[in-house]
Image 1 (cartoon, helix red, strand yellow):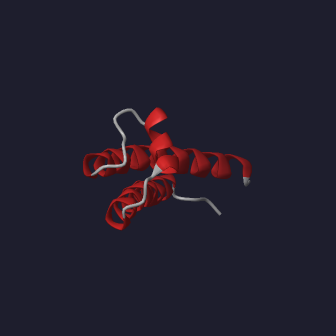
Image 2 (image 1 turned 90 degrees about the horizontal axis):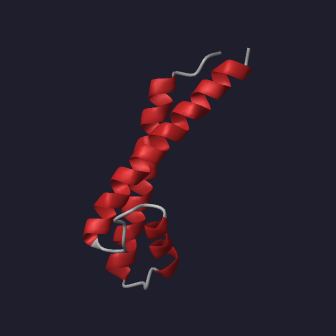
Length: 81
């Protein structure tokens, strides 16, 4: 069975982007300090625990998830013969 690489990449990209976005928004609404979440700023340039940072994290999370899902699907199809 082969995995559709485009579908897997798109779905993991959407999930990754939404995860970072929603977690950042949750921290902002609940008033948490976000010290652990702020460490993403060292990996994602321009990210911070702020409303603008939530959208920056959405984009970075989408791109990371897209690449990770594409690689996962590619290697699965390569080795599952």
